[in-house]
Amino acid sequence: MRILIRDAEILDSISKHHLKRKNILIENGIIIFIGSGIPKADRVIKGKDLKASKGWFDMFAWFGDPGYEFKEDLESGTNAAAHGGFTGVALLPNTKPVIQTKNDVSYLLSGNSRRITEVFVIGSVTENNLGDDFTEMIDLHTAGAIAFSDGLKPIWQTDVMLRSLQYLRKFDGLLINKPEDLRLNMFGVMHEGKTSTGLGMRGMPRLAEEVMIARDLQLLAYTGGKLHFANISTPNALKMIRNGRKNGLRVTCDVAAHQFALDDTRLHDFDTSYKVNPPLREQSDILALIAGLKDGTIDAIVSSHQPQDEECKKLEFDYASFGMTGLQTVLPYMQGISEKIGWETLIEKVTSNPRKILNLEDIPIQKGNKANITIFDPEDTWLFDEKTNMSKSENSPLLGKELKGKIVAVFNNKKHLIVG
Image (cartoon, rainbow, N blue to C red; front, top):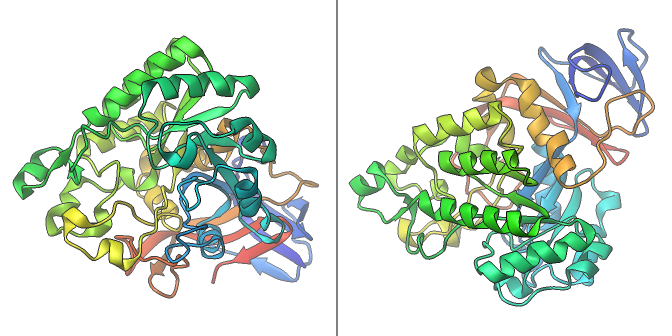
């Protein structure tokens, strides 16, 4: 099938067509034409403000497969990812069993030839994510794991963190850590501040994130290697990472898309959809995160997709699980800050930068190349409801709302999805 994308602005800094409006013709998964002409096609994709970028890549998402398939399985998760514009997604290892053997890696990768959104594997650093004994990380790397992390759990023991950085240097492996001091956050359910005090809720201080980052940066300076901080949320965290780079450390970081749009005042109604970790913080934090995007401190924007079933969310706020779905709402969240940041910068955070951090191939939008492309219209609107939600779970505060910023189509792996 020949599919023509009409009059789309190409956002791809390594393509000669960057920031130009072109027609793009794709046939059998290959870009066969880019130009101003209008070649014949079996299907034409048009829109008022179409933009074409390399396929989006999410480097921090959790599916429940294996073990928690009732929350999200590989089929529903990759379907949600495709509808959210992602052609690749790196999965966290916090499953049952934990992703810690070659067979576990093979299970996740085995269906990639059939998927428009390909799955990539983040292997567990410690056995069963308990933070004690190491997994066979070299074997996992050989089997196809692209990075190593305890995922939703921080690597909390200092000696384990140090030896992990040393161990991964053997093959220049990437260590991903979610910075959180579990003791400082113990029993906390939201950001520690005026809102938590007014609501009488136990708070999660910025300090719980920042002391872990300070520790890890010192360890990185001592050992060398590569370290990525996942889901940063505070100004001081960004300051320390920025200073670490100035001192020559190989450190990168990402921020969850919802952190740019939602603050802790959303919790006044005790809606558990807003209960996430790290917690929604204050407007001052949001402004600092936006500044971190502008100056390049923040390398990537992630979905932080964490589906939860009703039994985990329809509870008293204290007892509800953390997490919200995010794969289909990254674009609307980015739309909200696009006037301050600009699409050229935002798209780098979900395309080239994640691939560079993970040492993955970055295919430019050029004639003759494989089509790994996301088409979106930042001005179009759509209703996010039970019909359009592709996840098995419904724990999103945006569910039932009309959203601005629509994914129009994705192309990858000789497959395509055109969103109705």
